[in-house]
Image (cartoon, rainbow, N blue to C red):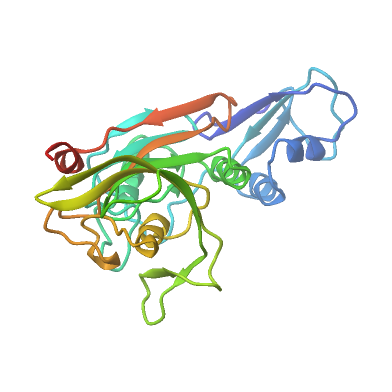
Length: 304
């Protein structure tokens, strides 16, 4: 019997049919060739009924297959730091956080320290979780709300498949300037980088496909100025997609001065990720998580 280190991320499967090779069985479980190579050479293990086996071994009904993934090293340039994390949900595979506005998701030239990734790396170090930080859903510095992190590169890969298949769903609420005319519609406009800027995006014909569903929750006025409270659902995940699409529509986000909004009502872009829904990459169970709109947006919405 092979002794296995318990701290490594581990998946267990029971074989349901005879004759299939282990490598084909694992491919059906969406374990990539790259991951299998890492398992073989970087400190992982493949066990069948408790014994280490080659990927060419044939399987039988009832066999138990264990995949022990190799420990991961922290990404280059990511410093583990101690900091506050608002944890919404956590298990052996995923970590779900509620990110405040004014915190970057990952380090950048302007925000190298104190990011959510730095704090998650600190948590992993403190709890001896042998993983780097795999961001599944990235939020801009001044966007608040739900943030999903995978605890293993294979889990990140499985979430990527869900993104492609549109079974991973992201919903936001925002306050935009002006009264949006239609109640429920789709913006299907490609997005690309604005010439001369490394940050700003625009709608452009040669950009990447980008689709955003928009639904009006309420139209209101504040100090005589028109605003619209909207719900948005991303069908794609381009950088600054919501901000770019709403500017293109002629209704920039309140507080978003990079994309034409003004800050006299709110000091940051009024955008919050309210809902994440997906199928758990290990159990297959449907998961739905909801985060309330924060105080600064509520004040703008309610006090009118």
